[in-house]
Image (cartoon, rainbow over all chains, first blue to last red; front, top):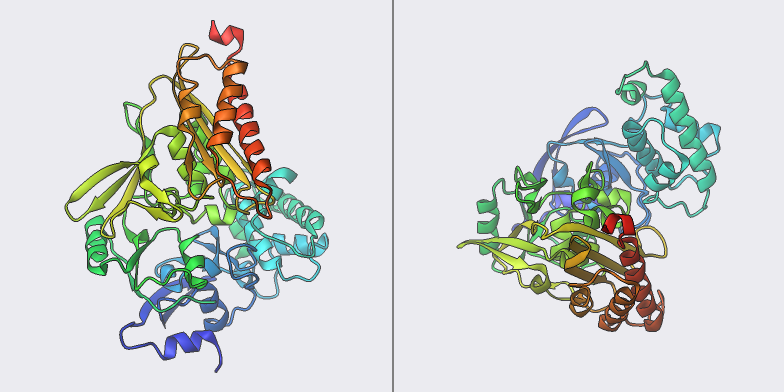
Length: 187
Length: 291
């Protein structure tokens, strides 16, 4: 066991007790004991083995580790796992049921919205949050919403196309005035 | 990367948080949005013994205007709350202009206005905005609260006059003495990068005459700069082209930039003058408006 999760959870120093954290992750309730300094990204990756969340820069710049925290995108390398107590986290694994694709995932596939794929989970979660709030974004609004997610392959053009594709599909699926359409797609 | 060990407290009231700060005896830090503090802890620039997470204290996420026009921003108001607030540009144009330019969209969902002012990064946008607006920070300590003007609050790079046992609970912008107008401009190489230079401007007018002015400068000194001479030069005038040119010159000479990979000191001074000119020119009234 070389994981950071094990290191910081199994051998806390005597004066720093572990904290019990209960959260919902991808719809599932989990309770874990963590040392306070454990980062949310590490709990997700090493603790829950959900390795779709990538840690890129580890310095709050790149957005690869973006997850949805109570529906809003956050950089999971810049939150403590203890702060998730009582909250809901969605990672890329939780966007759609196994063997199914969320419209945003499908959009990335259809429009070739990825090259190396490292930034993709963060991009897709930022895009999902955007479309929940704004089902019919302009290209400028998409670029603005994704400006905290960096793609070192610089494949932004197709990423924007992918989000436009997803927006159109979600709108086509949504009954008029149904604000929960994006969530319906994920279930 | 992960931070040094610390003990974690999650108080549910302001009094409890202040008591924890007192017990921390200078080794405790307040965690609000954490978008600057946690990276600094991961890089081991900061190693607090205790982290006091105030996110579980209710009723601190507000931003609102009192009946008299005083505007209050609670300690858990996130940048995104301000960015997405309807109608903010009418009552707080400088805040509304700066909100979308703070960091990047993901950081803005988490980072807080008050936390940014308390972090006192010379590159921070909100301290400049608060200086332009003549705002203050309300600090709660064991013996009560006090109000500190932001121009006194920031005492140096990453330094404030907050006592170790004081919690900043609110930022306050005083009611305008006339019609408020203003803006914020920032030059950054890419979204989320530190500012090459930024300028916050706020003016309050009665009729066409400037009754109050404030200019704050971001990223062009070892702390946020109050370009008070430039602002004072505008008071009593009508924002003529000559007055704007003089204010731009005074603001540029108040800046203390250093040459670095973002640009030379001369270049940054030039940006300050250009931004002051641009912002104030946008606020010039047309003849019809002035009449």
